[in-house]
Image (cartoon, rainbow, N blue to C red; front, side, top):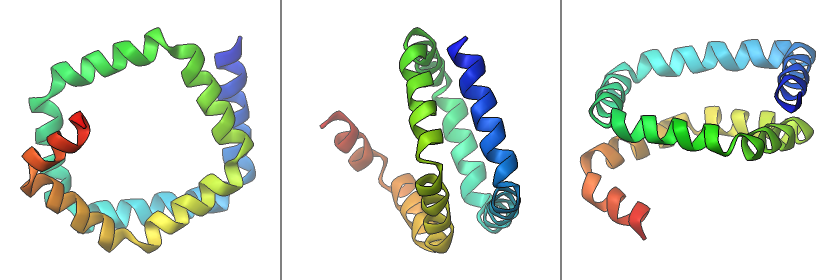
Length: 115
């Protein structure tokens, strides 16, 4: 099926780029540890909003053909995706600051989402 093909393609891409994937995973773990307090607060937020998360999961399931197409686009553009992951890592301090700001300003974030 399309899902199996996308998963297989993704697994192949991950294997072909295993050094980058491993490096990114290690870097991600380091950043997560450095920002564990923010991660804990994010987990608490996710728990507090679990009904919204469940609705999001249902939406993803209902739109699984689009999700599979998105996975295919990500695979087809995997070099760009890897570059994006590297960019995110290189700018992790900015991302962490943005995450803290979002937590400190939930009303402003909600207004932006609603907009």
